Image (cartoon, rainbow, N blue to C red):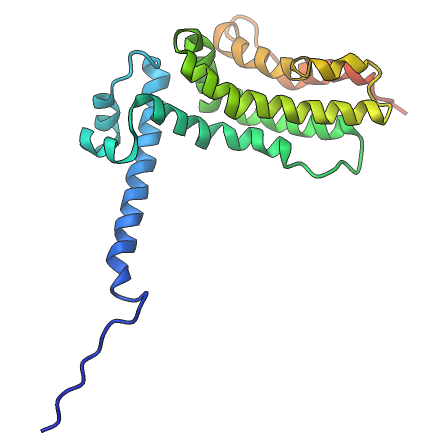
Length: 219
C-alpha cells in the first residue's frame, strides 16, 4: 500500500508565522513602554520617574522593560529618537528651494511650531530644558541628536540665503540659534505664561523673519 505523502511547511510559511507573531507582539510591547515612559516622564520629571510606574502604565512586568531597554536613561533616549528627532530630521531632508529661502524656512518653522507647541513633544522639550542641567548625559544626548542637527540645517539655509542676497547680515550664519529663537521662546512661554498672555507663535515667527529678511512686499 502506497505511503501517504507528507507535506513540509514551505520556507517562510507556517513555520515562520509564530516567529512573526512574536516579533509583532514584542514591537507592540516596546511601543507601549515608550508611550508609557513619555507620560510618566512628563508627569513626574526624569528624576522622579520609576521603572515600576512605567511598567504599570504600560501593562507589562518590570522585567519586560529590561528586555528592551538597559535603564531609564536609554528609555528616555529612545523617546527622544522616536518623538523629536524625526521632526528635526525633516529640516536636513528638505529639497533645494525653488522659491525663496525665507519661504522654505517659514514652511519648516511653521510646521515645527504646529507639531511641538501644545503637544507632547513640547512637554518633552520643556522637561529637557528643566532637568538637563541636573542630568548632563541627557542634555548631551539631546544636543547630539536634536540641537546640533537643527543648527546645522539652519546654518546651511542661512548661508544659502546670504549667497542669494536674501540675508544681509552675514554674521547670522555664526549664530543659527537666532533663527530658531522663536520656537524655543514659544515652547517655554506656552508652559509658563500662556494663561496670562497667550502667544501667537506663528505671527511672532513672521515678525522675526521680517527682521531677518525684510518685510514682504505687499504689491
